[in-house]
Amino acid sequence: MTIPMALVGIGKIARDQHIPAITANPDFSLVAAVSRHGKVDGVPNFTDFDTFLAEGPQAAVALCTPPDVRLEVSLKAIAAGRDLLIEKPPAATLGEIETIIGVARDAGVVLFATWHSRFAPAVARARAWIAGRTVTRITITWREDVRRWHPNQAWIWQPGGFGVFDPGINALSILTEILPGPIHVNSAELEVPSNAFTPIAARLVMTGRGAIPVTADFDWRQEGPQTWDIEVQAGPERLKLRMGGARLAIDGAEVDVDAEQEYPEIYRRFARLVATRTSDADITPLRIVADACLKGRQTATDPFHD
Ligand code: NAP
Image (cartoon, rainbow, N blue to C red; front, side, top):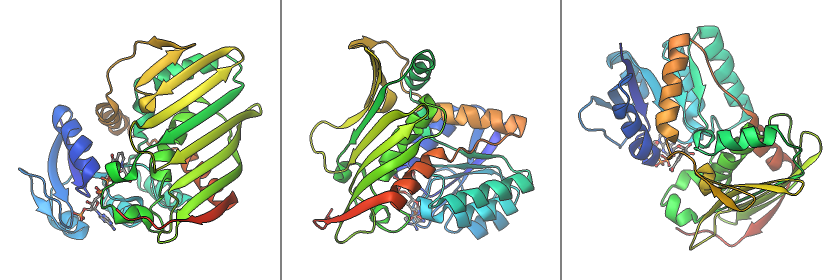
């Protein structure tokens, strides 16, 4: 039996990744879309979630909206007994995702709070490499061009929109996957455009388990080549994840990894979670962002214009 899926929030990620991943996976069938403006060909389209719940097909829900609307839609989906897959970041705040997790648990609904970057092909290899070594330093450099990746997405600059932490949390999701254990933020510098509520750049100084120094440099102003790197030093040995975990080098030598399959892997995992009635919702990357905002020294920068 296939799992019927409804996609909510038909924007960039729903179109680029969720629709192809669902339609390519024989365990799923796409049976509805819910979006105020976006439409999906070949399925019933609804412009509001209440009408979908009342009149649409029975289906699990994949939530591809911005994080600030996650709580409201998630609670409605859970109250209607729908299994739920949510995009990253899982909610706008820690309290919101903790509420979603608790309500889903009480309702017996499967909740999968996805971190797509954890499924990048080199991440599991990096985790295994680290497990056998004493890590001495981790350096994250995540610098991209906001105009290229988020054209006209006003929500990213609003409260609950995350700013540069929207991509930066992907790096933190890899960090917390390859380096299990507590990580705390020592200090953070956040640069916020004078016409926005969220940072365009953030530099974090953290400490990982066993007093490992970890730094992160997130910047949305990088034109030209884009950088999504995590470098792990273990004494004289060095592992480097590049391209968001799609490429791997050890001591400077490129290592072969599989082709990128992040969203197909997400849906394969969701099928297993539904089959076993198990939830998966890890909030540790969001906690680091929250701590960086609590501890961060904020400075105003030039206004941002798309
Ligand atoms: P997007 O292009 O803006 O699409 C999100 C859609 O959600 C919008 O098109 C909008 O469709 C709907 N929506 C519902 N309530 C909204 C509100 N209050 N404000 C704005 N839109 C609202 O954004 P996206 O890039 O797909 O990102 C969505 C989520 O996926 C984010 O959490 C992001 O971090 C995550 N994600 C994005 C990417 C990427 O490459 N873009 C990659 C991985 C994960 P209607 O107007 O039709 O309702």
